[in-house]
Length: 258
Image (cartoon, rainbow, N blue to C red):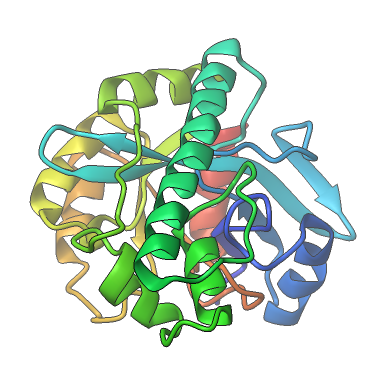
């Protein structure tokens, strides 16, 4: 039974939930603990590493994309405490996100001859642009926008400027109680991604992959490096608890976070 969803996005990045709506969504799913892990952004509201709102425990987290040299992966930091190094990295990433979004929007508008109804602000990402494309007169739905225009191999794609793995890990270690690897089986080279866990505290074992991959390599990495296992729905909508921790794994996570 999932009682903790440790991978949830809000409107601070590209999720649909406001922070105030998270407790109700958690209760609908029977979830008692939720980690707020917005992309490259700290919650502008959560001031403590762990808080309780409307009977639901909220863990202040972040999902930080880093470059390993041969691929880009996402690190999950949990129990965030203020630290200048992380604040500087996040500030740079948000400025880069806004500039990148403007370049993508300009490319799409020029290519399609439309004006998109979107004004890039902090937290902006390609999902926001895809929704704006779908809402425009252009003949693309949300997925079609990614498939033909703004996906990583498409004409209007612009790469983000992100920290390398060592820098990202250092700033997360300085400010977070637990640092783990997100959805390791989603990457182009899962084996190389899992090698990174030798330097981490945790790995995301429970995750709602579309293709139901064999979790064996993740379990092996967790055992080899004595890692915490984490899990979450990676919710960008309002449905929590599709994946996460049971009470046994949650107890280990709480102890490490404390």
